[in-house]
Each structure stands twice: as C-alpha cells, then as structure tokens.
Length: 267
Length: 348
Image (cartoon, rainbow over the protein chains, first blue to last red):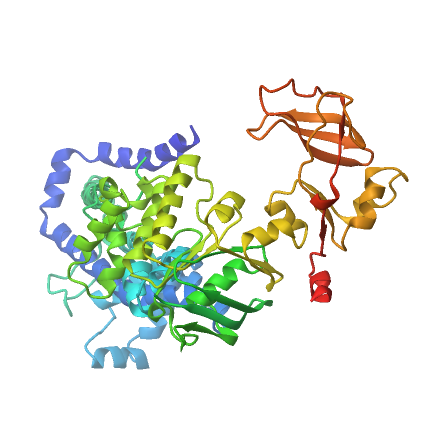
C-alpha cells in the first residue's frame, strides 16, 4: 500500500504530462531539429560526465573504501557537498571560477576546453552535481566485497592486481553501475547550474551542431514563453527515451546479458 | 609428500596476541584447531595463510621458510568461514579460477574433471547463490584442491549443514587426506567432526597453545571445562559449585577430588530398577531417549547430574520426580585445570 502510494506519486505527474501532450505532438516534437539538437547535446554532455565519473569517481570511491589516510572524513564530507548545495549556487560558484578574464577561463580556453557557454561548461556542471553519486556508490560497493572472498582468491594464486580485476571489481560492478546510472540520471536532469554557466551552448569541442541548450533548459524556455503543449511534448519525448534506456539496462541485468547482473539470486 | 611446521609462530591483530604456536604436520594429517570463540583459531589460520603479519616465528614447508611469502605463493588451499566463493562466477568457473590465474589453458576442462570427482558436475552452470549449504562447501573444497595445494586450511566447515551433507563432506575430507595425503588444518566447533576426522587436536586458549596431542588424550585428561564439554563430558562443575555442600553430599565428595578448574565425569549409569544399589540418590528432573540409553538429569543435592539410563525399549525410563540411585567411579573423575592456563603451567 505504502509502496503503491509512492509509485503513484512517481507516475501521476508523468501521466499528466502525457495526457497534456498528444501522440501527434510528441511525434512532431521528436522530429524537430531544435529538439534533436538539444537531445544530442544533453546525451553527449551526460555521456562525457559519466566517462569522467568512471575515470575519477570510481578510483576515489575505492580509495575511500579501502585506504586509511589523514583527512579521510574531510574528503568524504567534500564529496557529499555537491549533493546538498542548491544547484543555482553551484552554477554561481562555477560562473565566478570561469568568468571571462579569470585565470581558469584563460587556462581552459588555452588548452582547448573553453567552458563558458560551451558543451564543456555543461559537462563541468554535470560532473560537479552528479559524480558524487558514483563516488558514494563505488565506496559502498567496494566496502561490501567480502574480505574472505578476496583472501580465498589470493590463497588460490591471485596476486593483488589479479584479485582486484577478477574479484573486487566484478563483485562491486553492480553497485558501481547503479552509481553511474544515478550519475547519468542526475546529469541529464540538471538545470540550475547550467542556466548560469551555459544557458545557450555554442559549437565547441565535440558538439558541432547549431546553437542550442540542454533539454531541461529547452523545456524551461518553452514553459517561460507559455508554450505549454510544446513543453509537455518535448518532456514526453525525453521521458520515453530515458524510460526505454532504464528498462533496457534492467532487462539486460536480469537476463544476464550485462555482466554485472550475473550470479544474483533471482527469486 | 610435504612436511609443514610452525615454529613459534606469533601474530597480532587489533590488540589480540596469537602464539607462539608450534605445530608439525605430517602428510595426510588432520589437525583440528579447537577453542572458545576469540581464542585465536581463525587468527592462526589467517597467519598461516599469509593474511596477517607474523611478528615472530616461522612457517616452514620442507624446511623452506615461507613466512614472508605473499599468500599466492604459499601453496595453500584456504577455505574461509564464508567459503569465499565468487558470486559472479558459475560453479565450474569458480573451480577453474585458481588454474586461470596461473595461466592454464585447460583450466575449464580440468575444473570439469574435478567437478565429476566431487559429484558436482550437474551443478557446473549454477551460481553459488543457487546452491545449498552443503553444495557450496563441496564447491569451495573442490576449488581449493584445483589449486593443487600442499596444505589445506579450512575454517569451520559444515556449519549448519544437515546430516546427509555432513556425511558427503566427511567423505571428501577423507579422500583429501587418505588419497592425496594432503595435510589439513581445520578450525571447528563440531565435536563429532573433530573426533571422527582429526589425528591431532590443537586447543588454543587466549591465543596460546593449551593442548596439542591425540584426541584420546583429551578424553583421558580434559584440560579445562571447555575441553571437557567438547570431549562429551556432561557433568562439569567449577569449584564454586562444589563449595558449601552438606557433609555427606556428592558435592562435598567431589570437592577434594577437583582440580583448580573444577571436575568432570561422564554420565554414570543408573542402578537397575528404582531404589537399586548405589551411593548417591537423585530426583529425576528430565528424561529423554538417546541411542546410548535414556538421558536422565537428576537433582543431587545442590548439583544436577547427567545420568545414563537403560537403552530404549530395555526397561521403562525413570519418570519425572522418581528417585534414582547411582555410583560415581573414582576412575571416571577428571580434575580440571583453570581456563586461564595457570594450572597447566604449574603442572609443567
């Protein structure tokens, strides 16, 4: 009953969205170049932010789970900070950091990663607000790997690196992937920081399309202009894609297509 | 045939000190490590396996010092308490794991042969989460053997297994030791397993060796209340229980015969028929059938004494509240040392 109420809370606003937007409007929205550009930018930037999480957040999670070092509690608190700070403040902080004329602005422009009103700015905000989910999920997952399992593997002939690659990482992978999914989800849903740092995105780096904005900013724009049917249609397109992606991942895990789903006890 | 020995092995873990422990292992010998919880049994196994730093002493294999070698280069098969099966690998890929990490190209084929030998072939494609407790134990052992170890360390096998699973596992243990001549060090809380399988008992107390020898010696002379109970003595009394008994009571009779840790004796037989001959008189408080005879608990003054009644069907078991008589033979008494080991040190 309680679980059902929560599910209803999740589903009813989406239902309202879909009833407001007709299937024809959704279809039309999905074929608009502006919507496609916004979708492409959103998936591109969120994909890069997930890659950044793989490269930086997973090792940090491992470090926090398995190593004792001075200031560990401080590092853990810093990691949790982006989750609790309002994202408009995040955008403001990043804005001051990379404002034209600032040292970081000059540096990032010089090395070919200009962040102000570019895809890199979107990525920067997305990584800031979403990477903590991968750090925290990785930390918990690495910590949950049974010490006895690792010790058994070591005594069976696996050196430390082999034991990490064949035991620790595969066992922790399911939790890490859950963290990466959260990171992706948080990235695509971000708006506060992006509004300030990259309201419009001009072609730069890997984004070579027309001037656009992320899908959340686009919907915000449509809403601000009073174009509610269009806002509902674009939102519906995005929701359908996101739902299909999550469903595919879950089916892949359950069926064993995806390696991290293997070995779970299916009731 | 490989000979292993521990020479004054000592280790520390979170303030707990283990050792020095001395032990020699012959090929095919099974050593059961016994002791109360926290006595250092698992610490000993993990020290031998190389997971805890050794602060003093040596681990030798055929005279070669392995003390500083990493776990993967010790030639051991270690089965930890939780078994350590890889949850993301099937049974056959668990068993092939030690061969894969050694780069064996025929790892899977060799694993399948081993699974056949252990009767696990039908389970080859299952994951550990899909196995019963007994099956998991057998897979863990098969995997340990796939590593071709020269010593097996087994931490608390067959916890919570049913009798059939225990029987199957004891067959595996028998094969390891008799056919492969593998020495095995097994930590156990299970008296039937220890007495059935072990050639030697190593009793640890507060991290040090309290007893090392043949199991029979522990039956002749249990060193403390724990080992007495482990060996199956049901009448175990600490000195406090024997103080203050009436002059002609059983407690008063036992008190001067007790050691510093108290006294133990096996179930005395009930005198045949109510009111039969016997020095001591008791009032039946509990009575239950066992294959060896009805197990009776009777109040004898301040003490409760476990007694052995007639075999099932031989005679009517004594009823609750009935008066029974029995004798306690002098030669059945086992004076006990203190659990802190003070008495043993004094005796040596």
